[in-house]
Length: 195
Image 1 (cartoon, rainbow, N blue to C red):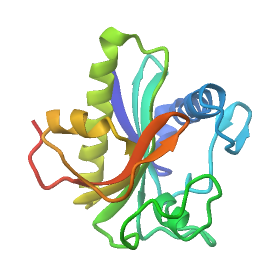
Image 2: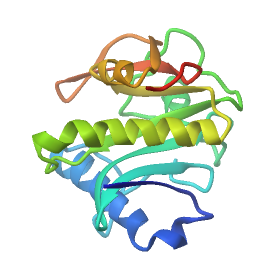
Image 3: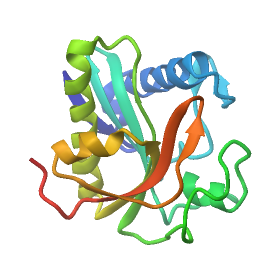
Image 4: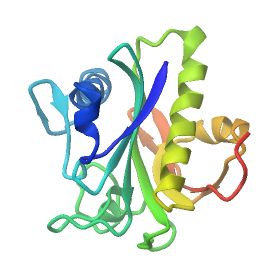
């Protein structure tokens, strides 16, 4: 099992890993969860998959097992910025605008983490290891890009996993239900030391 963080600068060094990640997102979010998202050629993508974003991936022999997208909160592409902020601004039909208690931050040291997934066919014996790997790669990469805080709309079970890595998470908004799975926005502090 390996981890990688892709950008538009380095994705050519990773063969088909980027389109394979988009295919894994398609299976996870469109086929399994029935989310109404843009897709083409069996790949899921949206307006945040730009040169400003980074994609952390856990993979083995070309098979994508998990992934997450990181986008700086200072990002701009047309009318869009980053997912949590754009939802709050009423630009996204599928995410309620009241997902945060305060105004969405815009700062170089805060990055948005979204589209977190572990593919459904990762067996239970390996799932915990894959989850820990994607969280570790996300934190390592975000820190490398100068982030000290992440913000994300995440399943409410994520803080338990984060605590095992020594990551502090603070609730940033009310709990919401997406397809029977409770989610909420969290601030993820990366100031603490990971175990």
